[in-house]
Amino acid sequence: NKNESKILLYNNVIIKDSTRILKGDNIFIDYQDSLIKYIEINKNAEIANFRYAKIDSIQKKQIFQDILTSKKMDLDFINGELSNLQLSGMAITNFNVIQDTLLKGFNIVSGDTMFIDIKNNIIDNMFVKQNARGSFTPEKRNTDVSSTVVYKAQNIDYQVNKQISFLYDNAEIDYESTILNAGEIFVDWEKNHLEAKEKNNVYPSVHSIGEN
Image (cartoon, rainbow, N blue to C red; front, side, top):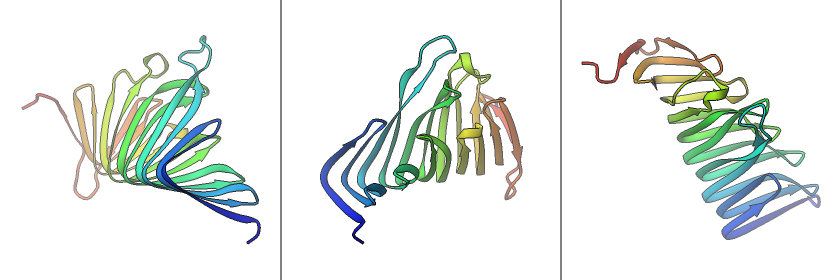
């Protein structure tokens, strides 16, 4: 196809634009009509994404950095804009939770594989497959969550745009020295609300750290 071109870059590649930095041992780029259509990053894949947000409603916006790493990444683009990506192998995402330009907190999520949807250069939805775990540290002035929340499950569907999460299969949440276990757990981060359900004979249970 005369309107399509491909580029393969080798050995500790770094690609920069105005909003992100891509790194990897090898990077393959597929162009369509002079626009990026697809990128594959092999070995030591890393993306640094830059966004602006406020610590509070009074202060000026400042720059914040999200970091995504994995063994391999596949990035799909629509009209030259990043649309979705897949992180495969030791996937880790460190990202700032921002709503209406206000910083809500910082989330670290890891798992075997991640599928991420991007809208307007922001993580919109994230599905973490197998060995999913993470922690959310709130910006206390901007959320009702008062301390760090540690969570894990086999799979997690994190709808960042709605600030809700679904933890599936052997789900666990540790918050303020109290541990909630269940087959499934629903979390509304904005309202500081949890719902736990039975699944595969794993029933909701609560205990405090240090409890006999």
